[in-house]
Image (tube, rainbow, N blue to C red):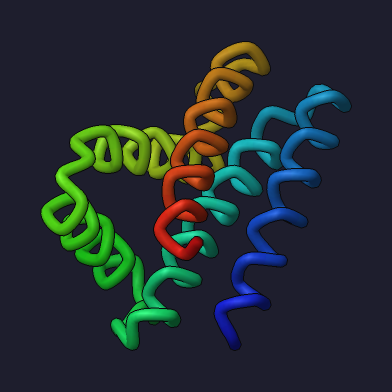
Length: 117
């Protein structure tokens, strides 16, 4: 995939997350939020030539970006996305909690998009 395809996938998944949330499906909204965050990281990795084909490599990239940029918000925002991913398996967050997590994912995506600009 190219950087642009990952960026496009990020936006599609964010839209789907909002639609799922509006329909009351917190589990699917959360998973789409996780997917959007992961695709955003993959876009940055692709642009920089970093490997990104596993959850571990995505996490490592976020750590690298945190160190590179000095932006200490990246890790906790990414952790919010990971918690949304956990919700797919456990279904422990309600719509309000997932909505808050999606807000954090959007902020994370905005920060990563700024690195590509």
